Image (cartoon, rainbow, N blue to C red; front, side, top):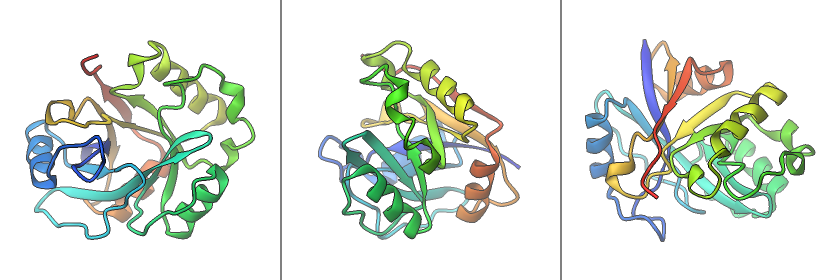
Length: 198
């Protein structure tokens, strides 16, 4: 079956977030999504609630010296702040390490050359990334193609109306974390998105 997921959403647990998880899920359903990844700043979702016909993927957005790093399918705390150590910690939890909005603040693709082999994917659409660099998402897609990396997409939503501004479309056998992780690594059918408000 074909599903659509927003793989970068912030809840009220992020210092700059304000959304309760039940409200996020309700809004995501309204947007036609079958799931979301909760990626709060430096915090994991240790207790993942269950919903009928909707999946909540636990995650984290780690602040590192190389920029923000998403850990998808991670429900254990990640203490490391150094990029390569954070990637190792994400992998040790069985998660996927995804470079978040790599060109939101920098246009230098070469700065990531020595860590690209560590990445499980690149966020090629972020609903907020173009606020600082209008070419941020296009540059992220080019980077993913250059290194032949799987792609993800997310809204980076901090308020309800942003949910769904970025989404990845996958084909899965079942609406489970295992099936979704496999589909992401095998590459998405497509990514979709729209720019949020400035």
